[in-house]
Image (cartoon, rainbow, N blue to C red; front, side, top):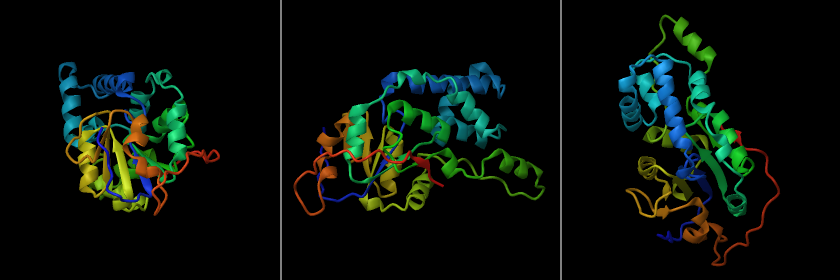
Length: 265
């Protein structure tokens, strides 16, 4: 495992959620992809033979399949999409993770979730993992796409002179990274970004963040550190526990239960 020992001091840790705070092997990602394909087939009436390749191609080009579908002009409600895609996920596979909880609570920095998913999914995942009070806030789909409520969509349709809507803002676009830095008031040079996606890591590095690829033992372009598991964070990044100006590690003392993470606007 690579160690990151530049001597920099950090004041914020930015975490992706899915397949970062829990392993890809649980199968949540595969179930989500199947649900997206079912939505494309049954809700958007896309030819069945085209769905699997189209789903993957749009994901690769636009960051999420949802974003790609919107660019292509498909008209659907964002809340309905999220409800269908996440509504039947096997959340029972997610179990409380007291080890990760203790690691997170022992870290002195601000901790923020940055996910492309919607706030309802984020809340369920964090609750299932027992991590709902480990983060200061959640930056999610609704945070980066605030004018996507049903009322806003209706207003858009009813406005004769409305300008074309911009596309969905999401990782791995540099714009999304810059938006998060602004929303959360981050200093990129003092922020560490954890994600399981190589392209998200590259975008984070382009935005000036320190980067950690999770779920891989090998570095990817733009990554400063590679973690096979988020549980290895103390071994790979011991400096996160170091006091300012001191070489000793801070003892891992659990702070009292924090207020449940709220969506940052």
